Image (tube, rainbow, N blue to C red; front, side, top):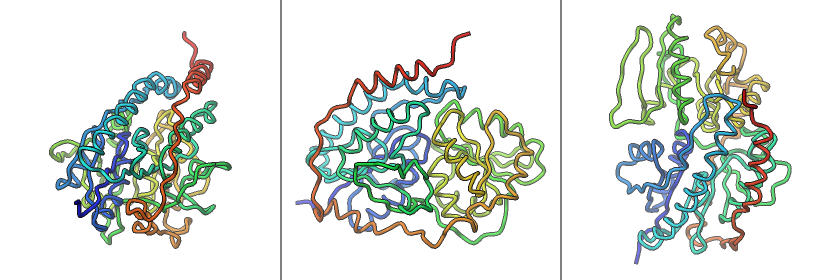
Length: 389
């Protein structure tokens, strides 16, 4: 007889955000006496393996997410990769069936991995995107996403339920028929007292080729900057490497403790406007400058929203120059304009009651993926695509 229940924690490998925001949940599970198995692929899995070398880890099928080089082709590129994503979803679904039997898994926490639901054990889906923004196809992509979410027993949204929240309409649609639990902002980071060491910290992540595109742009622009710069490339490798180009210190990646100290010791953070980054900045009360990934509608929305709220400025990647950073002086960051008093990650112990049999499981929907929705979306994107020259 097992003494402790085993929970599979499986974040999507789309940049590092899904993995890093899983870290506080993993620590909470361990503190509550659960056995934890990690599951993901690519850099997300490598990051978790470095953070939790003592835990068993399993490689799942890759969604093989890649970004287009040009913003106008982003949606088209993602659509072309949809068959591979759907194949990976089916494969991880089958792999989970085997894992439940072989590893005696008692529950699953999936951060945006769509195939990890199961009819015999409790499964949780974590997302801040109850509404998936995709331009003219938003209704379609949101409906497809909901079709998967409803297969899980619970949906946890890492945000606040109140009007003063971080995700805006992404996590607070006007109508949403699936019950959700708002669990507060998730961040692996904690504010620490430290002296200022860097005028600017660059924090990169995300799929290629856009990660490299932004790295090359910022390296070029920062050649003319006179202050001290820490440049974290966001490339998780076997060993950490540190190099220097004049006033710029370059690091391939940082583990949690070092990253936390570096962020707190930096006056301004240049980064993508991914949602996990937003939660980290909120937790650390930092000032930042956003450069959203070209064509990534969610990041563009978050950047514009926080810009309009007077919290963090942004600039489109193709228009960015070093002089734009001066705008950050008149934006508050998360230091005063956002309600810090409400920060509360909620009771993990109460949330984990699902895995202890303290709450009934929902009846699972047997509705399969609606291929007609996929075809409709394909036609819509064809209508929107850039005409050939």
